[in-house]
Length: 566
Image (cartoon, rainbow, N blue to C red; front, top):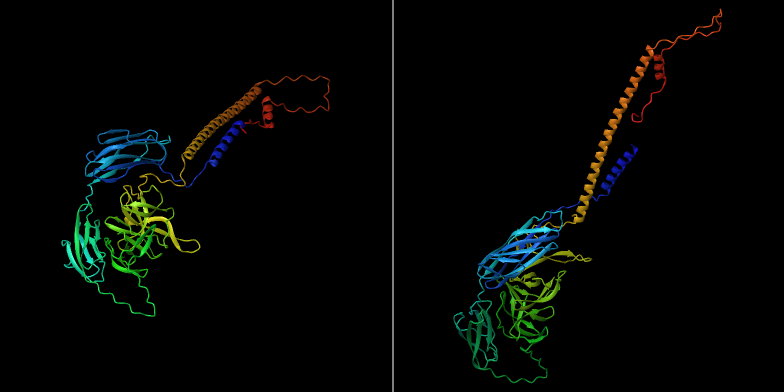
């Protein structure tokens, strides 16, 4: 009996020990395993090829997946990719050796017609490596769309929007349908300043014949070339220069006269080039700028001033515009980015701004310009530029190279250690109104429907350990309950057996007493006849029956109890 009790105590202690050492985590965030299949939406022009990306993401490691892609064969024609099978308008993908939590496959199509084709996912299965989950994970699907646009038609507009001269006035007044004008200038004018702007901002203007004017008639031509590069129109200005006045002889003087400042031929260094400032603006006047002049090295130079009054543009002898930089009295190439019919002027990074944390400076080709940008990854399609918009506001912008769009971004200000001065945190934050969520409400188009990992989430090994220990504890509790019931039954049987034995002993004693009462009295031997009785003979005590003796014995002896009864 004592051995069984020791076993029971050992089992109870073992169960309590398992409970005490079991890792209890009160802040566990449990997330059901899931998967997501997302098709990226893209656009292209008719006749071009387009690549569609399909990403399979899971919250646990995947073992395999398969799905079917469907598309409109009237709009798209499959060219190449990661498909394992192809039929009319469908692609079958089967990956039996997948790994990790995210995989992206790419498929290339040729656009056949203007319109849109939905690229949808069906017949999908995503299986995890963990056997604790079912064969297929619950999967969220986001279908994509391929939009095919008509090919871009370059403009054939070669008209001028405005035409003016810096000396004299045109006759007749300018009209885009009038192609010949006249102007008279004094004899001291040997160069005519011409300002010409095209109707189409993508057209180019070239002015010639406006320098080294001779006495009499001179022809200045303004050639406008449309965006298509083929359509041209030529405007003419007949410049009549008067006879130069004779130069008076200098008057002798003991005081030396100051040397006259030259009005042309000022050379400047732009990067590794040496250029000469032009005294006439023949380039197209950009949107948001107007004609003006400014003093550079004691020389009055024709220039273009922004409407906000903060920027100045000058023209060099190569016919291009350059941005004046007051900080070092130098010039940098004038570069613009056109997005959604708006023009942004790329600016050198001012001293008040710092490069965002994690970004590096590099040069990229945007349009036809080599532009200084800032990237956090060399293979990223987007980049940061510091630019001024059409309203004269200077700020950071994110340029999307794939869609050729600009988006203004802001930086959270954080106090600089030891100064209390806010500095950029390095993480650009788009304006809420300009952030376009994808089909799943995610701005970055990451895993759709996937559960975000929490710092308190159990790993697969921890989950299995917890389940195993719980099972062991449950088995120990069942064993303890079984032993307890067994011992309880044995105790009940032992108590019943003791009661029966005691009852049997009592009946035997009563029978013995009854038999003793019924036996005859023993015969007493006769005393010798001597004639006289002994004087000192003791008086005989009354005889006791056998039954009385038995009862006396029972009353005098202590009652015996068994170990079970105790």
